[in-house]
Length: 268
Image (cartoon, rainbow, N blue to C red):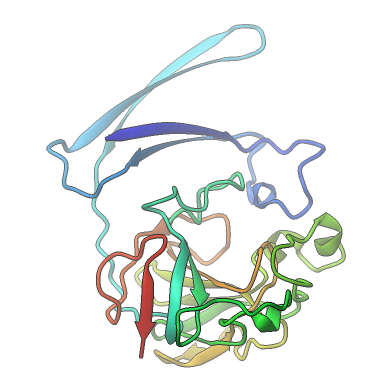
């Protein structure tokens, strides 16, 4: 069951992209070890002992052992799915390892949500954002809460299939956070925050400090920031900032079962 252990360095190198989330890490260097269990089940153990040995350039060796309790997260906030209509999950945690490729694990439980038309089709023949069936779909607040972050100034990416380069982000205010595109983060209390990324420029309807209700429209599905096409990145996490807090497993009251890659949905 223990599929792999992944080690990631958070050292900021001279060639680290300006907008890379790793730049949000305050330490000179940090390492992350992740344990993936590829099937969901209760384990007949209550903790794991991890022994780590490291050595520096002069071969000086240090070894430490840490006993980590195994915990099963219980979601506290009742959430609704953040978009309505037909769609499909493009990326998730269970079936393809989540979003772990950017030097951070803070979005590993994130979902990429793609809108589809009534026939569950995604695109017309035109290579433009507006041809995507999800483009402009209303984004809903999954639960009541207070807006702690809202961004509305990141330009829409030119077209699907093209990831913007560093020069695209460089002129923007706080380019690290711009990586998430036009984004809203809602504090639901109990250390649970909903994060919605990549919305259309100019579509975000809320600002920091606003109190929102469940189902309130907060923006439109777009293609901004680090996105290859129109979609909504949604995640539940334990704190108010991107890239710095643990993402959390999530379930929605109006969608049955786990949302894994390739799962179709039709939310009324």
